[in-house]
Amino acid sequence: MLTLLDGKKVASQVYEEIRERLTLLKKLHLTPGLAVVLVGEDPASQAYVRSKDRMCAELGIYSRKLELPSTTTQEELLHLIDDLNHDPLIHGILVQSPLPGHISERSIIEALDPRKDVDGFHPSNVAKLAMEETSGFVPCTPLGCQRLLSAYDIPTQGAHVVIVGRSLIVGKPLALLLLQKALGANATVTVAHSQTRHLTAITRSADIVIAALGRAHALGKEHIAEGTVVIDVGINRIPDASKPSGYRLVGDVNFETVAQHCRAITPVPGGVGPMTIAMLMHNTILACEREN
Image 1 (tube, rainbow, N blue to C red):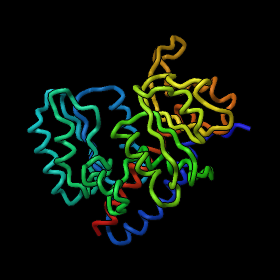
Image 2 (cartoon, one colour):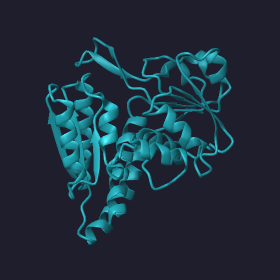
Image 3 (cartoon, helix red, strand yellow):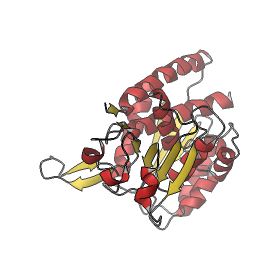
Image 4 (tube, one colour):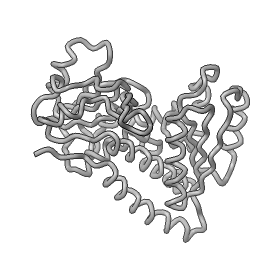
């Protein structure tokens, strides 16, 4: 019987834990603060930022949304980052990706105070993840995938996990996370990508397939063996004249064909997406707790 891995349900459990932690912080007269920086007018980025801002308001986290024009220079953005690094009201800083082409994302990430890098992309935090040093921050989407597997009692210890995608946002940090000698990890991890030969044979050998390619319906029924667990990280817009918006959201996995014979799968939307935002809130609370 197919299990639908409901990210909204698990995220609500995370928020209950967060509310308990917030209660303790507020007894100490502390309010976690998150600054979200958006440069330009990318529609998907604007939607993400609104979701994060709304969740901060619901939880009682101080939120500062900084929307800058696409003409913002790298120097201006670096100056803003420096101000936020030294702002005592801000415990977490998130710079929404993608940035305009004239701005170096790497330079911006490296300018963040690692103690406020709640996205977990600063080289210091990446190194801590690789070294299994728990004082860093784990990127939100990989952490959300791990929490989702744990919530549904899907064992990773000794399991063969195939991650399709090698980005610094999902693929690489998720591989490091699941390789750790820790609960919710201890997996045997294969990282595949667009240049991988015999991809179908590799994904069919997996106990768990995690799709993070950024391409709609890149994996179909032929890629997934009977009884596999499938985590679909992708969120892609495809045209759909029946929708008022003119498009619909789909994942990197063809849900209709894959769901017929896999053991468990995340929906899109409603799977990994809610978990990413929940883990961002978790990391922001953690940043405040560590500072105090």
